Length: 131
Image 1 (cartoon, rainbow, N blue to C red):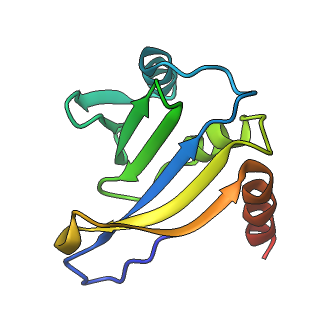
Image 2: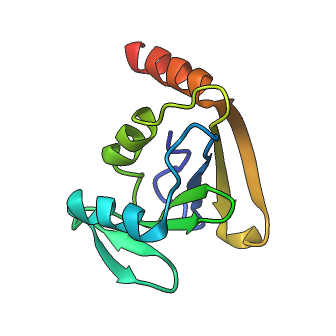
C-alpha cells in the first residue's frame, strides 16, 4: 500500500479515512485514544493527534459529531493493528473506508484514490493478501 520510492524526498503520506455507519458503536476520541494506548501507542502531540508505538508514528483524528476517523502515516506505513481495528467494524453496508494520499508539496489537496464500503474493503484487502 506504500507508493514511495527510495530516495524520493517529497513523500506522499497515505491516508485512511473511516466514515462509521449507523450500526457501529458511537466513537469518542477518549475511547479511541485509549484503544491506541492498549496497542502500545503513546500520544506525543495532542494538537496533531500524533501517536507513536516506538517503531512507527501516525496521526489519528476523531470527529465525534460526524462519526469519522482519519489515520495518516507520519514516518512509516500504518501499523497492522489499524487494519485489525477496521476488520472489527461491523456495519458492512454503511461504513465507508476511503484511501488516499497527501503530498507535502500540495498540502492543501488530499487525493482520494479509492472508496469502499466496509464489506468491499474487506473483500479487496483479503484478495490482495492471497496474491
